[in-house]
Amino acid sequence: MTTLDYKIDFAVIVSVTKANPNGDPLNGNRPRQNYDGFGEISDVAIKRKIRNRLQDMGESIFVQSNDRKSDSYNSLRERADANAELDKILKAKSSSNEEFARIACQEWLDVRSFGQVFAFKADKGAGVSVGVRGPVSIHTATSVNPIDITSMQITKSVNSEPGKDRGSDTMGMKHRVDFGVYVFYGSINTQLAEKTGFSNEDAEKIKQVLATLFENDASAARPDGSMEVHKVYWWEHNSKLGQYSSAKVHRSLTVSSKVEEPKAITDYEVLLTEMEGLKTEVIDGL
Image (cartoon, rainbow, N blue to C red; front, side):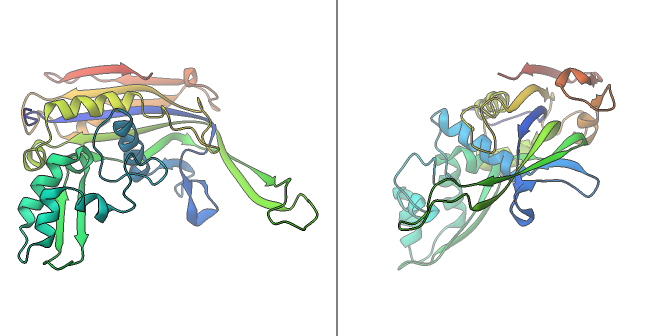
């Protein structure tokens, strides 16, 4: 595989319909909002969905969710130990952090994409503390307009324990965004790609995943079809450093509402300013 030799920027437009795109556990799991009332989806949540989609494609992923893991390991340490080369380094009296990072990047796509902190205690060896910086960086997604959050009380209709009369005891609250359009941006850095071995082929996989980000992601908070990717904008520069800064490229895309209270994606206007010499690919979400 050829190491990525040109800078990439990207942007993704997402709509949310009667769903909770990213609940805040410190605020009763209400959809995340900033102080100005705009909705947010954390970069961590977006990376989790990217990892899940890569896993669906059969890629080797290091940070797997417990409810979606494709192996029998219950911790990151167990997954690392299962690699013979990494296990040998972990058990050595003097470990090589550079070699550990190289093997981990070669083994797992999410490590060579996003980076990873490996901090494992010594087990008859020297232990390891390695930080890998990944080339793929992603911003927090922010809604185009302030969001309206609808809350409803939910109750149970069955007993949790035997021997008690059935009753509709209050369980809590459920929150959702009735409708909102979010945009997030990202970049892929060639200097960090050289260090992790991130390739042109890996970049194509990330592009493919972004267009299908919410496939196989349904939950009670996000029913099937409630989260949709509408467009992916993919800018490929003609050099490692790029012709333009990522900030300038990202500003070339503007999304604004055409009506005071938008209720559908058609109520929004998307404007893309072409930048001289910069290749732009527009991909429809699936």
